[in-house]
Length: 320
Length: 320
Image: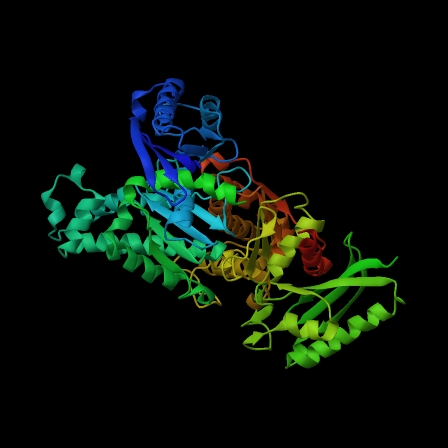
């Protein structure tokens, strides 16, 4: 009997990772391709699907591929298109699912990277068995995938779950989206770096972070300094956790989830980010929600989380 | 053939309204009872169900009652209980659905008043045919009922949809819930009244509102003054709409609804509240959501909206 597998594809601005994944979440065959080398999407997809077909052929007919799941920035589940993704060279609306379907003759499901991560946590990770939870990805920006009653929340137009662009301070930091004071300008790897630079400029407090050039301050460097008890670095985490915790309390008042899962680079700082986030989340919660909602780290390995999430989209759809 | 009807019950702190409702939303027989006259819930329910049974009997067997829908403050859909409602005399957890079931021997569905209003709008009102929308009730407080994919959002514990207690200003106005700066301390009938009193105290601007004693300033009085172009009254609506619009933009970033429906006393101020709310909502939205989400007035008549919503709970459940 053939082994049922899916193809998971994670399209990023620089690299595209892809993998043939079985039901248990094992990556059987993996590879990657430089996204930014292709000015046009069609030659990129010719190359990508060529490699995937070769991978499948190499297994001498032992695999049955049941579908292809794709996570991509600004991926719209309803339309199957990437719509106006600022970090990709392919501009406007790219009907990606259809273009892959033409080449592979298989069902293709597309969504954005944070939604793919949420499905990945539900099928393989920290949200196994949960029906109501939120995944927050703390990377360059802040993404969110919201699961309600066992299904991803897409909303009326497929774009639900942009918690990174809810407002913290109406007159606050400029955001890449054109607005001011968005959550992701504070709670993300770049957000905490902006906080560190502001704090270094405003005070004379000695700090390990003063020993590195400003343009090399990063969330990792702040984490390393915090581990050495650097006061400014610790204050950065406290400040970031306060803002993130407050907005997570808002999110809980919206959908009353069982858990919120933090994923991505900044979440790797462990208790340095979890402790203040949890403290302020509880503080800003309505009493009926207090001490009920778990704040958990992702259980997906970083290197293949996005690919697994994309693959899981197909298994999740099959369950229906 | 018997006519299928349901009983809709709206329990408020002062009055309980109830009605026998047909599938088209016609109130066939209605009555009400003083809630606050009953220190204990059991004699209250004995009286209430006694009247309802009498109403049904009076129709000489022409009605077939298929269920009872109840909207009540802090009503939990999952448990069928009213849990710690601050405005009711019955304290703690009251297993209301079960107590009514014992007396009527019919299916009973309970939820909170804002959720009942949302179902009412979907079955009979402004949200007919919609699958993703939010109803905001602007009364003494701010309630919200969120519909996602055609179903009420209850979350993990039945308490989803408390947008009135999301945070506007962390150090802002004291809220009845014990927190500070909650949305409902600004955007509600009492919120706009607090705003008016603050504005009157802070400025020397002449205003019609100065002619009435402070404890008689109300959202209706502010509305009447605004209709006469009173500057302070107009500023109150602008300020309230700015805060409400900003938080509605946050809500849209969460669930990407087709429409937001404003219901209740303050919504009756029409364009005075809708215009600034819409303006700031659009301003604070991520570009992908702009000019897409409708801001609509309720289409349920005030006098029976909550009762109709409660009744609609039964019809909505039958559809599944």
